[in-house]
Image (cartoon, rainbow, N blue to C red; front, side, top):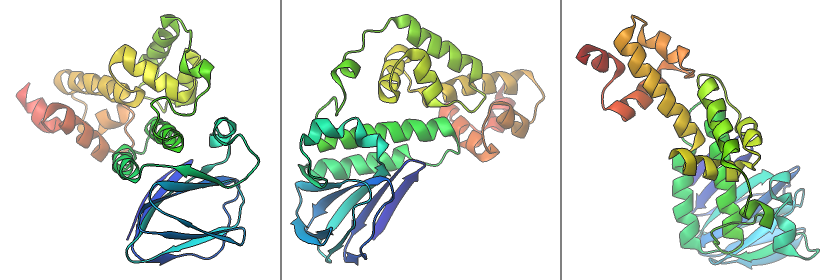
Length: 267
């Protein structure tokens, strides 16, 4: 059995029961292998090793490897572009080996994976994908250091000395562009913060993560348009920046408990 979530810059796969692959590399990408139960028989650059629950193996980009598990075993594998880990790896490794054994709590990994699946539900929107990637990557980094709350972040990022005006400017930017394809890096740059710290600071200031704030603004405008104009539901969905009318329907019904047509009839 395999369950896979794929975002533009990160892929996470849960594998259970018998599985075997052939020796291969991931061009420019790191791989983190985390056994969840049973034994994982791993080969790294022709060196054989075993991994059991509570352990994990981090491979540097381009290292040749393969593994196999039996019917009584399972693993979670994360693959991401090397630059995503570069800033944090020196703090974790502090040595020259390319493959690094880590201690990771398997129950925590499985719980996080279920949450990641929810985070990565398809939306067709860049901001949602980037926000999900950022949160998943940060939680992976936390797991790599034993589940610490702050993750593998620099001291400077852990305690940013920033004025509230930068977050206010980022909020104003999103309010001005919420019907467009917003990039999280653009908003984070306005706030002078990294992606992860911007998401955290933005939520502290508004009560919403950036993409959820965009949806909040869109729903406010959707209610106004449904109540006060003759625009069709399809027209409104595209006016608000949704990639498809079905996405608009899903978000609107979740927000109001009614379909757009039902809401309009009640007004």
